Image (cartoon, rainbow, N blue to C red):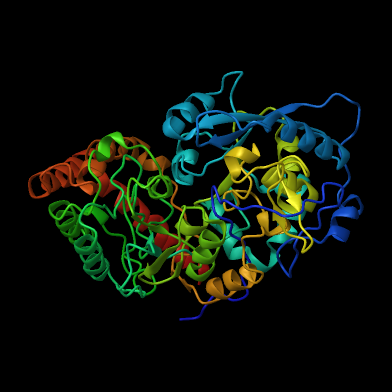
Length: 526
């Protein structure tokens, strides 16, 4: 299988804890730059030569952009960061300002549904991470086509992605661009993390299957009988990265063996899913999965960080760097260890996990694209968006890396979502943090160079012809999926009910439509 070469990316851990011995609040931030990753500082200074700024009449539209709050409240320095970002946007010729619209993680979908209805308070720019797959956004008419906007006001984004056109194409539906992938990690196998102390004496090596992971979980439970190692929760603890779910996080029609076979199948009747639930039965029986799962709305890493569990499943980009960062920063209060589960694949679903869009309700679409163009390609603006205000939310140490200042020890006390990188437009333009390995970016580059591309890489289904069936299946999944995955119901009894309910809702029509569009897409590539 031909491997995708020379991909470049960046990763920073959420809520990482680190301290800095020296903060140079008067220094100029110099962004990390590497071939294909974006621009250097010199590129930023000469941007005006390649893209004319918007006319400056002093009357700038304000564009609303959603931001995620894990605590339910805006960070303490949110207004200062917004003001600093707007000053730079005007200086750099965006001809627009932005307003951060803070959305709580716990009820994100409900809030974003209300913000994407076309009213006066609708969003103009959407970060769709954790919200909805791109096919659903297009079918619902919530996002605007971007092809002409990229040509007129997003030329630097197009230049950024010239070496990675197949990655940019993952933001297309039916040949039309509706989302821009973040320039970040593009391959992420499933992983398991746990505390080092609890794993003492237990071999932590990469495994191929969920069954093999369960063997390790059983050993961990036997050694630590009063602790849990899978975070039962209302938020998903497992995204199947060993398949290609074709950008549909409802998994209503997937490629189970995407490097060899392009047959779209019913995930919920696959041997993989049935076997996964067999493992859930074991986890439930042996009390490996945490109790009271349906009242735990924490994402997996927060369950792990808060020691609701002493292990967590999930997905990640480079285990060497992930564990290094976590242990250097003591993000979880103690050293951790872990391993990868299954193959490292490059799929549309991996890439379009993190997308930015101009909404269909935006009245200043050209201005919105100018803002996105700068967020993706301007080092100063990317750094403010990611790390905040120099000397206030972060500092720069003697080695040119970011560090906490003013007594802060984590993102919350820093007053900004510092280091929250993978969902940002292009964190690779920003300095690394002092808890990261110096070769973090190189490790990521090597991993993505070794990722195996799906035969359907770049394809996303347009769900519009089956929008009613997709909506009905979404409701069925909302009713059955989490109780099954958490082992809160009799799996043998409820799984057939779930499968039949999906048939009744129209999953077969969705699968047929995906197969039709995929076959046409593949034929057009020949």
